[in-house]
Length: 218
Image 1 (cartoon, rainbow, N blue to C red):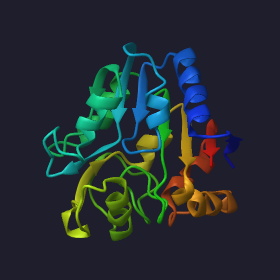
Image 2 (image 1 turned 180 degrees about the horizontal axis):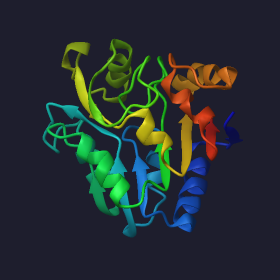
Image 3 (image 1 turned 45 degrees about the horizontal axis):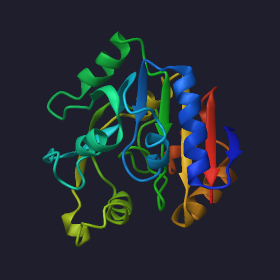
Image 4 (image 1 turned 90 degrees about the vertical axis):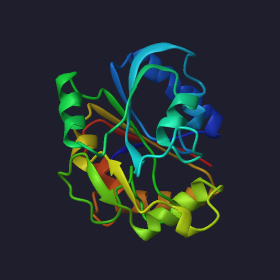
C-alpha cells in the first residue's frame, strides 16, 4: 500500500511537494493537467531545469487557446524548460522518447472523483498499457465536465484522448498522487480502503509501486 501524508490544506501540500520536487531536481517530471496540482505548479520556480512530460491531450487536439487544452494548461501553469505531450498521430513514440531520455523521475498524479481515473484511463484500463488513443469512459467525461465548467453540457466534452498508459506511469521512479477538495473525499476514502490495485479504480495503481505516496488535504 502506498504511504499516506496529510496536510492542513492544498496550499501547504503544494508548497511542500514543490520544494521536494526542486530538491530532487528531476530531469523528466510527469505532469497531469486539471486542478489538483495547481498549488504545486504555482509554488515551483518561474523557470527551472526540468522537462514536463504531460500525461494526455484531447482528440481532436484543440487549439492551445481552448479552455480544455492540456498543452494550453501547461503553457500557462507549468514553467519548465520544455514540455512534451503525446501525439495522437503516433502515440507509441511517446514511450520511446521517455525511455531514450532515461525515464521519468517523478510522476505526479491526480484522481478522478467518480471513477478513480488517472490521466484519461478509466475503469478497466490495461495494467501494462502504454501511450495510446483511448475512448473516455462516460464517468470520466462527467468528471471532466466538472473540471472544465466552461463546457455547457456533457455533449461538449470530447469522447477521445491520447494518454499515457498505466505501464508508462508505473515505470517512473517515484509516484506522487495529490488528492484534495470536498469533491474528492469519497474517491480518497475508496482508494485508501482498497489498499491494493483494483482495475476498476485505475489510480489505485499507486499501491503497486515501490516509491509511491498519496498526499492528502481537505
